[in-house]
Length: 614
Ligand code: ADP
Ligand code: MG
Image (cartoon, rainbow, N blue to C red; front, side, top):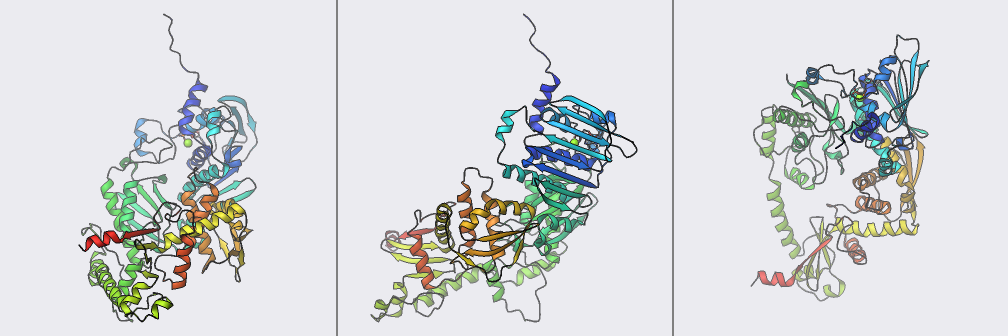
């Protein structure tokens, strides 16, 4: 029988391997940016056309390549970064597998210009699908410029699998940010189609974060640092009151490489424990610098998972340093309604400011806790909020029953009031009353109905907004004092994407350039205290759904607006407001659920109540 095993031609092998390294334009961006960093560049320009589908170009002023190196760089396993297996344990560069350029060249049209400082002339190379089409000397600046055109030209399956330009661009921005956040010492720019999304100057670490995420971060982040002989952990954490509803701003970098690490994430979460309301995510930018010998280096270039040899130690150091930082900066929770109440109960003299952080811990022992004693003292002097709340509730009920309350309970209806019933009766016959500034309770024929005010309002607004987006009309009210809204470049991109729909619902938004907008009209009939917060909140909620391709854009926008504009928990509601809300809720097409599927109300049947008393 004839032999049937053949070696695959290089071009085919490269194309197959490319699938692992380059999944989308953003993967190529990541590889090129990392190469520029490894080349010691102090300036990196990224130019994108059509979300990378037409062009990805990276220009750096790094070390450049000789003619031979330029040619070699496109060979598989060609790398200048390691020479022996031992090097693997001390690697500090971003790449080292020598796969990226070979992979990219297998599935795109690549043009490379590169020149070393000491050389007179540089090298021009053109490669298409692994075939060298041109190689000649060229006069060009020091450093390297690589253009990738027609990515996946010979892999239609990949090309068809790409998402919308907006989605692919988001991935690119994400990769750009991950590199830019770690290298504030490198000036970096990102140019997309006709506009600069970023022009980042050399700056310190904090300023770089602010330049990337928006100037409002100046007040939102605080530094943290902890050095031990094994590891240096440093970076910035977000103040709890600015915590996000999306996971967006959570970054770990191990030796300057972006990583995902659920276990370390848990360390951060637990340090923030009880400082955040439920559903909020802490913001963090944390850099873990450690001897490369203590990290599992055998990582795939596209993988963001890594392993530390001493996970538990790093966990403990990380957690304690975040707590210390929260303590040092006097972070006291101001969001949790219930915790705030317990502070009110504490009759501390006005001239003694609260200095220590309020952090309730579940575990007692923390080997790194230097601020520990102060914390536990503080903890002990605080009244238990749960206990107090319960007694208060009983008291409330008692007072309501005696008609002595003014907690937003409506007046009894006229005809019933005139029947001169005892006060207990009149309280019960009131149509709606609010408890805990959060639930509305009412009596229906079959039982007691408990309505969650926020969820209910979300449903009402969602149906309204969706209807107006679909019908293309809604009233707008003019803002008397519009203020400029400056958002991060990636949020600006999202805002441009949904601007038209927002305007249909009644917003009026104008772009002033350089990520600055002015909102001078809002949907009429809604109370807005701070329009900028409102828009930020809408963006925030929109981002939560953004990756879900199964949800229609209009639905995403209506949901985002509803979630943000719905009356909050903790807000006292007046009788008429409750009445209008309930009335509108039951005119909705799906009154019982929020647009994302949570209950809006719940009924306790009288039958059940009756059974309890048998
Ligand atoms: P790796 O980065 O894993 O070594 P790549 O395929 O990304 O593999 O790059 C191969 C080699 O090409 C690198 O090791 C480096 O020597 C060279 N190279 C790539 N990009 C640049 C650049 N922008 N400037 C200088 N040299 C580069
Ligand atoms: Mg590389």
